[in-house]
Amino acid sequence: MFPKDKTDKPLLAVVAAFAVIAVVAWPHGANTTTVAASVATSDAEAASAPADYTAPPLPGTTATPDPKAGTMVDIVRDPADLPPPVGARGPRRVNVNLRAEEVIGKLTDGATYHYWTFNGKVPGPFVRVRVGDRVHVSLTNDGGNSMMHNVDFHAVLGPGGGGKATAAGPGETKGFTFKAMYPGLYVYHCATMPHAEHISNGMYGLILVEPAGGLPKVDREYYVMQGEIYTAQKFGATGMLDESYDKLMAETPEYYVFNGAVGALSDRKPLKAKEGQTVRIFFGNAGPNKSSSFHMIGEVFTKAYEFGSLASAPTSDVQTLAVPPGDAAVVEMQTPVPGRFLLVDHAISRVERGLVGAMDVEGPANPDLFKPDPEKTAAAD
Picture 1 (cartoon, rainbow, N blue to C red):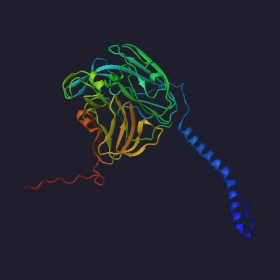
Picture 2 (picture 1 turned 180 degrees about the vertical axis):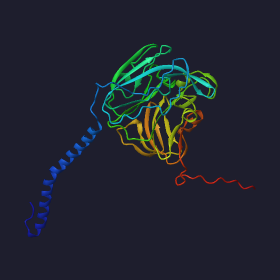
Picture 3 (picture 1 turned 45 degrees about the horizontal axis):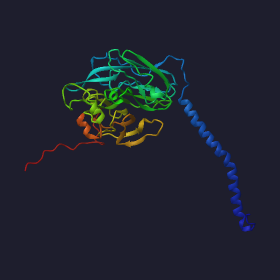
């Protein structure tokens, strides 16, 4: 019971006031939650056009020509060879056509290697879809090949990621359809036993499942994958190099590579940008065995989507990103200073075994951010 003393009248007034506020505010609080949820739902609906599965299928990759099995080809995947952003379209049917090609390619100066590839390049085609797409995957194993091949997509909800459905002998075509359910950047690879042999020989790639409404716009996008090559001959040998199954099982690669070969992204096909741009890299670590400490010397990743997760908020201002084998990450950076910036794995000894790329940024000097000291000549004793 509240006291009835006259001196307690102010207290009674305060209690009464709080009671009125509580009664009035309670439904408004509920309405606020409802309104917030309604706004969020409206935003999601605005970003997601309705599905149209009756429309003609869209291509999920670029139309890069496929080489013929057994031939000598340039196996390096240009890091700029990826489809344009999905944008705000609704879910559609998408076709992804893969071809297993066993080819000969340049591993390093003076040395070649027998690569197993998807569509004649390492990595395989960059696949780009969106949440809700119904994706038909077709895998043809070229008749000139000697091995059975298949493809396992980490983005697929189904047995073996589609591996069993696509197990094809030379000359066969197999396929399956899946619905892309979760946004993110995912690895795909050949999963024919022994898995590690098919992956290390070059059979891997990335599939990007964009969220409804697409990704924020950037100036440049690039596609980079790290891999390991296990040769019987020691690093630096010349001629046609042979694979070593023993070194593969011992997890002791002779070569570490970006996009399939030594110098692929430094001497042959470096990334390019202009001063003041925003650059996004879709990065995957094919392994099959070693983790990567992905780093760009002289840059900071202003956004980093770890584990390829696009449903999680990015981490800001990251120096080095850990990417396990069979995983991926999306990073973004600004380019306020011109020059050559090196891509490395900060397990830095791997640079000496081929693992270095480059991003060349063009533009005027920016002494406010970076200014080398003038050259000086040492004084004589």
